[in-house]
Image (cartoon, rainbow, N blue to C red; front, side, top):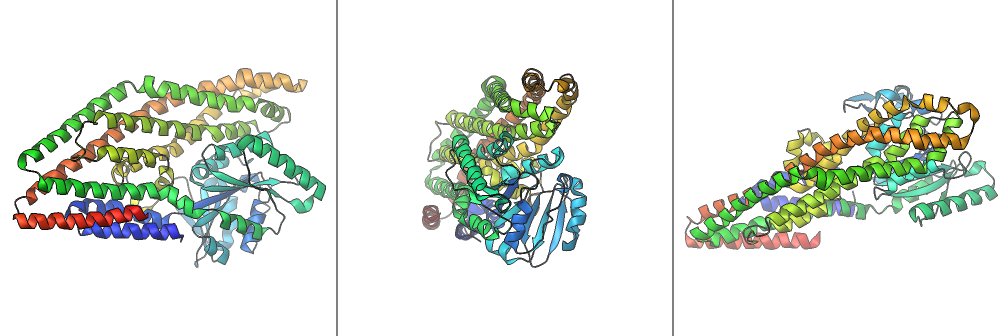
Length: 569
């Protein structure tokens, strides 16, 4: 467990203790408990990626110190394999519906033979190396040329969930970073994730070739991604180098980026509740009525803003974003037109090539644009209630913090959505999963991408691939690259885009309305909570004056404790 992890868990437990002993904060106990449990269980997935037979499994075996993973598997038997430490060794094979089949550790080959049956597998090993890198979880990924279904499953699970990627380029087989490989790396880069490129199988090629491959790879990565890391050279016994790469990952910063906004917002909400309660204890009856009326007016303004946002969703959010996404996909396919044409002429797997290109840009582009919509909706709702007295409500401060959470919510979402404590409906996740309304909303919206993109892409490709044999069949005998490339640009790409557009229209129409409704619900809920806080505090006014002052003094002490926690996170 990392230092940040321990620190955040300790902070969460202190906050829970304060909430348990402060009446007005009792409603925060469950939210804080969920968040603290999420921090405790958070794993950092580090996928090892590369082409088929690039040495991924051999590298991991060298790191483990034993030949656990098979190295002679075919693309059809490849499956994403997560390696975890456990004193009880076993294999868990997870299906698409999240049901689990359990196998003995020596039955790995049996599981791999049924790879298409499963989404991914978890390999629990009593291995000291895995124990030492906790909470990092290594993932042996299928090769880029795995069957489409296998590749899609891996992309949709590990591109958004992976925190760092180790990319292998086989010096013996690949020599150069191809456009296909750049497309895969771009899928990582556009999500703001880091990767470490390694040239594998260097023991199988002359030294002069190694230097040439490394130099070319370095120039390519600098041009494409402004990549500045050194490129590691690996052979069949480079487990120590993998260990160093893993230990050099700044996991403290990763935990901070994932959880600090959520902890901060919870603590600020607690401070806000105390401030409201103290103010309400000092209100006379008319002050309390006025504050409650302001909040009711704010709720009415939210309803007006929600209706306006929904009415204008297409013109304000959807049309521009959909065309922007179409443009990105079109550019990605056009930039790879030559590669696709060459693959067609050489009898390559065009379906996988197109699938890889689309999957490298479409999910991240939708995620980015949904995040932008969320940020804008939050701003508009904030403006609509801008005249509310800040002493009565800290909602504007809450909204600003909510915007910060949106960008990093996906990691927490994936932990919570897959945890036993949160097998609940989407609406329940919005209100309670993370313990921050906006954070849960962002988590839900980002998680939806993972469930939606795969069928969208699958529908697109199945329809488009039906026309490919006819297109390429007409000119395959000519072996004219430019003619095939022209067909790709003039027929294949437009066909793909024509399939994507209606799917995106349907998806954005539904999802944008869900975002608007959920955010308005969260703002309304916050103001309703403030209203209840004022009402509950007013009931305390029935106590003797001395008791009220004691109550205020107690709350002020708790506020200081919370402010100290905020300062130290």
